[in-house]
Length: 218
Ligand SMILES: [Zn+2]
Ligand SMILES: [Zn+2]
Image (tube, rainbow, N blue to C red; front, side, top):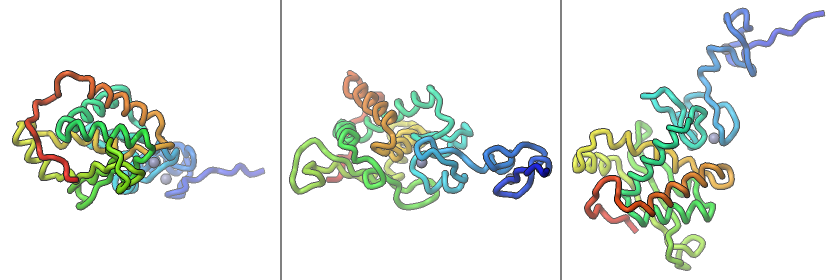
């Protein structure tokens, strides 16, 4: 009788050959090239996960896969997303917070609502198109759209104006988070976001004092 030895599906080595274990078809070395998306419930190679998948992103500084589908999300990472979202709301205004909540409730988040555009090296701009509070038959589902390109250069100028040198890093958790919200596929994350937005709306003071920043492009 022969015992079948499981080989790694990527490099073809057996556990003995790779001096480790082969778990779920991958040896230790190859497993480190993958990360798990908790939304799609599948393994993604690092390249896809980093650049071609909306649900998660790699935080180089902390060495963790974060975002709506990030396998390394811990309680304090959610706190970071909440604070980051509140900051983003301060910069984009109450209309943004309101429209984001409406869009989540309507189940209209996803690529068409929020995505990166421009450069693949970091982001050039973030396209945001949300359902607004004023019914208008001209627009999607009868709702007015809250639409805006958030440019990297704009974040840079805010960063100088408010003397927050790492502003882009501070806004990244929120931006990556809203990009990953996926309606029926992310019910818990949607609920969390709605609670954070509610918290934001009820807060007496903004996190930072912003004078009237550029109004959204309509
Ligand atoms: Zn392998
Ligand atoms: Zn996914």
